[in-house]
Amino acid sequence: MNAEPITKVVIVGGGTAGWMAATALAHIMGKLPSFSITLVESEAIGTVGVGEATIPQIIGFNRMIGLDEMEFMRETRATYKLGIEFVDWLRLGHSYVHPFGTHGIDMLGIEFQHFWIRGKALGDTASIDEYSIAAMAGKAGKFDWPRPDTKSPMAKLAYAFQFDAARYAAFLRKKAEAAGVRRIEGRVVEVEQESETGHVAALMLDNGTKVEGELFVDCSGFRSLLLGQALDVPFSDWSHWLPCDSAVAVPCTLGGRNEPLTRSTARSAGWQWRIPLQHRIGNGHVFASDHLDRSEATDLLLANLDGEPLAEPNQLSFKAGHRARAWEKNVVALGLAAGFLEPLESTSIHLVQSGIARLMSLFPDKSFSEVEIARFNKETEREYSDIRDFLVLHYHCTERDDSDFWRYCRNLEMPDGVLEKIEMFRRSGRIFRENNELFTEASWLSVMLGQGVVPLTHHPVARLLDETETLNRLAHIRKVIEQTAQQLPTQDQFLQQRGGAM
Ligand code: FAD
Image 1: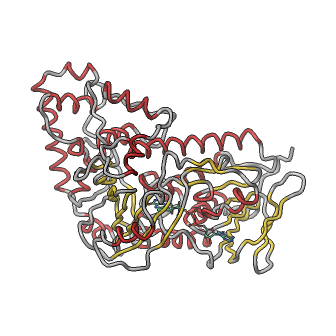
Image 2 (image 1 turned 90 degrees about the horizontal axis):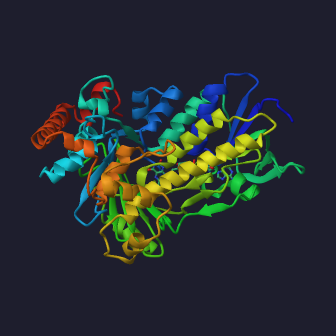
Image 3 (image 1 turned 90 degrees about the vertical axis):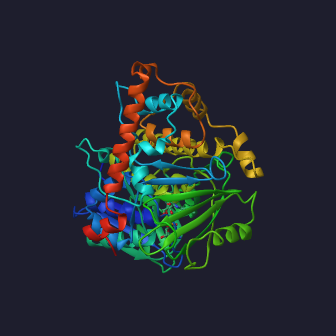
């Protein structure tokens, strides 16, 4: 067994995944003179060119690599995101918000939703959105940072960013190169493997350069150059659960309402995203090619923009699922090279981040212990399947039956575990977060209610509060949230005041 430390890391790919990995590794280990990080990328191949909405965990990543939030906002033309507004998902004309943070306040030791369910039975007509500071501030176009140690509703707020992904990668590149990462321009044309172990030994580039390494991080995007192609790790196909396999994306000029929210509007064979940034709006239409052809999908997108298109539509194809093992031999895949789940809940960049964190905690020595590799793969698989389950919930629980696509989604066989969660919620309003899964009880609550899963009853303890007191308390919480949201600065004011405007 060779327990010597690894000192040469090679990253293939300079998209969001490659530069996130390079920056994080350089930040943690790059200062050691014995440790080298090389990133190979090909400008001719380019990056996927989409990926703009994130979830709150990215704040931790940006802080870990030492980014100043306002510099980041300016450089990447970012806006704040307080959640996702889902339009027409339950039925045409209906909308709800999946906000970041939590709802209301817990009372009598039980979760808030039980009092909300009881309130409904007592005639309270307020939607769950009205008990979320993130949803109310988001809809009002307002933003401020959370105030965690106060009694203000702002203690319950969480936020993320919407940014220009190309600018984010360029921003990270500057940081990584300053921290000692060596970038090599070139196209990998051959992968050299050790004959005995099959480990990757070196990459041959089109300009004749040979790049040797000990640990290879595959961030080559959908090509999955090392993990999928050289090591032949199979792809676990989940398209029977998530049938969308295509997208068309186009940026447009600013127009319409630009709240700190990502919007997802359900269409006849998929959905359309709208992500307002400081200088433009990112738009895209994710669809199932079995149900809609590309030109119709593009026309539908172009007919539903709030501004003028700023580029030719970018056409993409993909398959939902992931490589059966994200780590094989001495190759760890991150980003699209490891797998892809459609951006309905903005999880791909997060999967890169969590892959990096997992790699750091299981960072190998030259023995490449199978135990650690197996742990990495098990946790990655679990994370993908937890997210998949949450995405399937959006499609399956709907009243829409206006197209073959929606009829397929309504009738699809759900993955194990989701049905149990829905059933538990329907019966008693209870939600359990399993295995530290990414989406919390608050997320499941918003989306289950938003998608029309109505609880029949609630936790019995909620009945200990008498009827008038229940309704009074609910009204009070609503009022405080509404007033707090109204008093916040608008997002534009906040960015101007804090130095985050471009
Ligand atoms: P890429 O950006 O494709 O980068 C691959 C890199 O590998 C490039 O630098 C390329 O040059 C290099 N490369 C490939 N082959 C070679 C070779 N032979 N030699 C040298 N270099 C090579 N994520 C979110 O979190 N939020 C979103 O809102 C979101 N929206 C999305 C919408 C769509 C339609 C799609 C498809 C994805 C979306 N994503 C989103 C995912 C997000 O775009 C990616 O997860 C993220 O950008 C990471 O991509 P990547 O770096 O893995 O791949």
